[in-house]
Image (cartoon, rainbow, N blue to C red):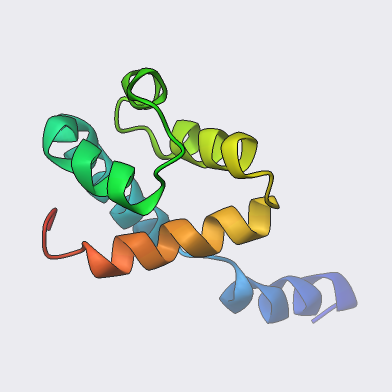
Length: 95
C-alpha cells in the first residue's frame, strides 16, 4: 500500500457518521412540526427570547442557536452546550 492509501484508511473511522447527523436533523424536524408545544419549554430555558424571536426561530435549531447567542452574548460553543443539554432533558418529548 502506498502512503496515500494508508492515510485514507487510517482517517476514515474518525469522521462523523451520516446516520448520527441525520438523527439530530430528524429530531429537530419533529420539534419544528410541534413548535407550539416547544415554545414554552424554550421560553422557560431562555427567558430573554421574546415571542417575536420564537416566531422567527419556528423550531429551527440554527435559528435558535443564533438568537440565544445574540440575546445572551455567549460563545457559539456555550450555545451548543446549552442546546445539547436542552435536547437531553427533552428527548422523551420529541422522540
